[in-house]
Length: 313
Image (cartoon, rainbow, N blue to C red; front, side, top):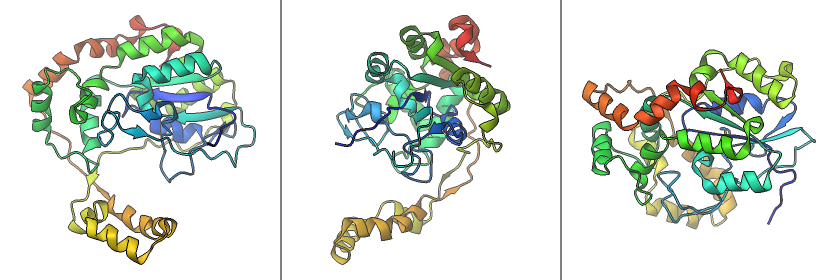
């Protein structure tokens, strides 16, 4: 088993679809920050190292409860003694296992928690899931499914668990601050990240005691709206039939060779095309907001809910 030394000491957690990807891409370009998972693929990979093992909750729709989750392998070959080793995993915020590990075994790690309006989060999460091959429900079907669950998360139902859990982050944010202390945690809303990213990076630099002038100049926001192309060819690349896998194994017996030759071809299946903004009836909007009212009030009155010193705004 490969060891990692030093362990990550800057952790980006928070509600999904709340800006962790953009923050990671910016911060890992600082010369004093190293990201061990940067070269796993071209995107902002999430390591998941604190969630490794048999999962007790369906953190992703493709990983139901009871799935064995193996984190991505870290790449420390390019580590040159940078002050900070960064990791990003939004699902960590909801994990008791992750919080206990950080509290007990990672006393020097600092944590950035990102949040956004819970209503907007649920809508954005729906659009994000529509980009995947594991979710085919319409928005109307989704709301009907949530009604069927009485808006209570069921860890045995991966299709609704995230929608009923991720927007309800207030109790988790408070717990992380209470257990880790105000000095180790900063909370940032997506709105602040989007409207004033330079101020956000300056504040983070001051907190981490690194040079703000070494932050990148290009501060584009990532993860725009879109959906997977529905062309038959790209659908075939995303989900090849069993005979295609059998043929590939016959022609290319080496797994390494198959990955080297076929993965670049299959990646063409994940082409995103623009999608229209979801039009939501007023009564549906009111239903969503009423079921998320506690966390909406937490978000709208953040300064009254958590210590002001932990908020970057």
